[in-house]
Amino acid sequence: MAIDLHTHSSFSDGSDTPTELIERAAAMRLRTVALTDHDTLEGVAEAKVAADRKGIELIPGVELSLDYDKGGMHLLVLWLEPVPGPLQDRLAGLQMGRDERNARIVERLDELGIPIDLAEVLEQAGEGSVGRPHIAAVMVRHGHVDSMEQAFAQYLGNGAPAYVSRDRLGPREAIQLARASGGVPILAHPHTLAIDNRFEMADLLTDLRDHGLIGIECHYGSYLAEGRSGMVALAGRFGLLASGGSDYHGTYKSDVELGLGRVGIAVPDEILDDLRHFAVPA
Image 1 (cartoon, rainbow, N blue to C red):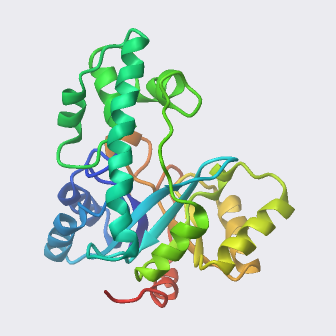
Image 2 (tube, helix red, strand yellow):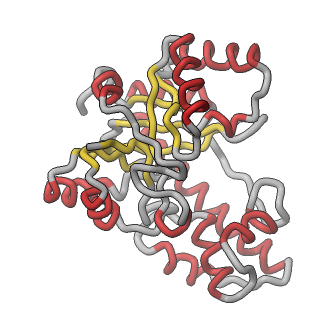
Image 3 (cartoon, helix red, strand yellow):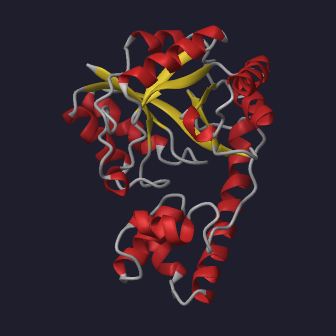
């Protein structure tokens, strides 16, 4: 049975509720799943109940978007329990920043001739953290765009007319907060860093490792076999562990399957114990 250490529920930008995600995991015969919603741990309690019922190990986690000037740097923090702690306490402020950002995006869309009701966006998100995919879903519903991909490409993506930046943690601070909170920090989908120079990548990974980074997401949902093996080798050169996951979002990324990603990945079982060694019980 397989594992998946990168998934999202309706508490951030996934379409499945935590319960539905775990039921999907059971159908896919997964034995361990990490719930890593963006900037929130609110879905963990529900997921844990469902996971206990299905006999699946649930790893609580979060995905953070970091302040990085070249590309997109995201940090997965695994085994981050929904209890008071240095990083957990900062999540409230990050969530407030998300709320302010969403309101500004809606204002910009209105200025562009695309009226969106923020209340409808909140309804689309349900109980969870509101993000751009929920805005995109409402845009599709009202015929402003044909697909969520088009919504991001033309309006909501980085550099698009309705894009709004938000406050983010710096990489070093985020990693240090994660370790101080008992979590295991993993650099997510390294291809989004937009680094082509191996010397620049070496400098970055050395710096992040020295500040407490534990692993790299090597077995990512869209990496082909050659790319996965290359990432595993890269992690090994810098003394980092290889993690992996699908980056599942339900119907919001309909070509990404839980436990498999886009290309049929299989995250090795043995990485779990290696990563777990660095988790500190709450």
